[in-house]
Image (tube, rainbow, N blue to C red; front, side, top):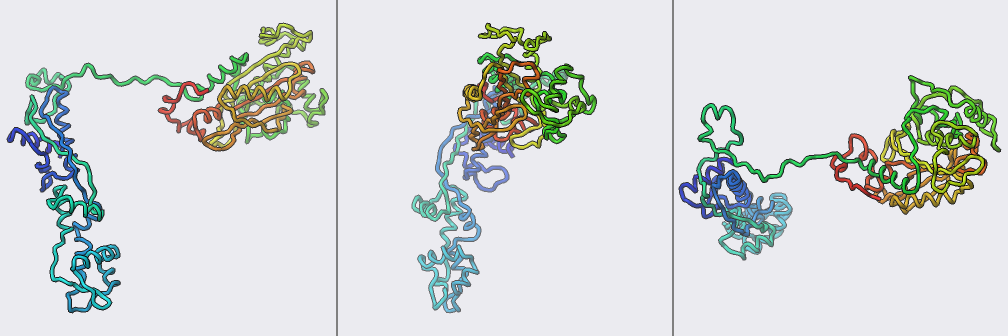
Length: 529
């Protein structure tokens, strides 16, 4: 129909030279002129299609827009056009005068509650009906349904010859609503033609061979048009927060630990941390174990013996766990459940000079600011951090994943206290923009005392656990060879939950995985802290 309407406009202009009022057109498939608002919208689409050919160097038409107020029927008005006004329907349902009157209940059943309620009053006002006894009868033999007639006129022309007073009455009855409309005056353009054939966009071999290009009209190239925007890569919000956290650690003088070993042994992941071999975290429902290969290479034998002894028999002022030591459990290979396994390996290297050893990757061989005065026992302070993936056999929900990132920090120095740890946590999280924190006493096998860290999530409107912290136990540090006065702070936080808080995400499964919005990744702010 669109092309038929365009052709009708062009043919009308060809015959009359101008189209003074688009409301005089009859849209193809319709019998009445285009007085309605919807009809003029259809005509506007056809005019814009013809006008768009100006960009192709084919200015076929020009048009002017005229604003006008029109009226359209409400659903109740449409019903009256189809069935008659309420008062006319009430009159039609009543018997002639002299016959048995129709009761109010029977009238409602005949025309409906709404028509009976509204029409009865208006019919009495017009003198169309009268009351006899307990019922109603016709007061006149015939009527003129002016309301229906006016609404039909409005439906076809958008206005009333009767004028504004009649329109106001219909608006008051909520049978019509006023709507801004428009109509158009159309004139021939500089390149007017009655043909609406689309111009060619490409010069083809067939055109050159047949010579049809000589008679073809070609679309004008727009060399000033912008090309399609190129899309580049974008960092995921987790990577942005990761980089910000890494910058905070480096700003505070920390050194990054190597954490590339996703597969660890039960010894480094649990035993070296003084986690009992019967601890529930080591069961299959919490940890992913490897089936091939299933066992690890042995750790340093003397250190392995010291760790086994403190587990089974105690030592260093501890009674241990008093349970049989299992070499098989210690040598199992697994996907690490925390990056503390890497921290344990790095602390073992840090204590090398304290043990009188010199091993590869010895951290004590590196210089640290403020650590020039080394004690005779070979210990030197250290601040280490890591950010990497860990794996736990957990049920996924709005705040948990089976694979996620852990941010871990370790501070080793003499005579550290729990107050130092809390103060550092507040400073660290304040730099991340999280000032509303809570600390809750907790239990960890390898830290005592231990604290859980909570932050307020404004979208979830609840406290969300974001990390765990504590001071490593002597049963973990002493077998490594640290002096008795050395204390080590350790803490870990998830990377995903701080990202959720900073970016206003209330379901972690929309942050990573197949539900992630690529558009949100591209548009997420670069810096949040």
